[in-house]
Length: 252
Image (tube, rainbow, N blue to C red):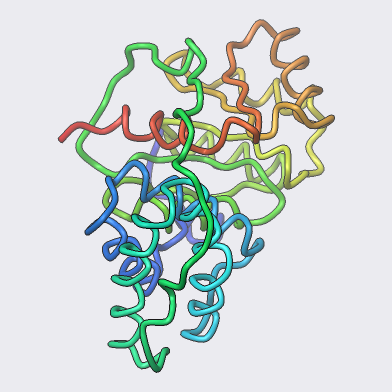
């Protein structure tokens, strides 16, 4: 029987930082929610494992990775408009002296959306609450980026770094999606990981992020040997297929 989770187990979902939420809302004033989430995740990924902890950190995120990703994905004109809105928001927070983020720079239009693998679009139960996503990784970095990119109304991610934590998560929670982050290696052997994930319902995707990496390939092989379905996502495809997968699990 599934019941309340003890605080000792440490399954608290990663919270969405209010400052990141403001950046996301500013971007959504110019870009679509789907593009905003994808751009923000890429920028946070380039920023590093930790999310910005201060307004100065936010300024570094915006003037560095976010500016670069926006110019590459949507081109200079739309990037300048989006960055202008973000600059106004940061000014209101007292972190910047002027809207200096819209400087000229090169950048073409974004390419076509990454291909979603067929098994990522199967019909599954959906709900109105935030989608529970269990991240198998050694840190909370991926979970934090996912939370910041989509917001607490859309996603409730948490991380499991050990086989004990993963077993507890699967026993006490019912994740809608499980993501194995092959870029953030855990100590869980692929065969043991496959054994634990055998308890996941067939409607719950087992997503391997970084499927092109050695650990990702070993995990996919272990899942295949265990006759478990999986969704393989190469980093070159971008994060959009996973974000689309999360959205497909929520109605409204």
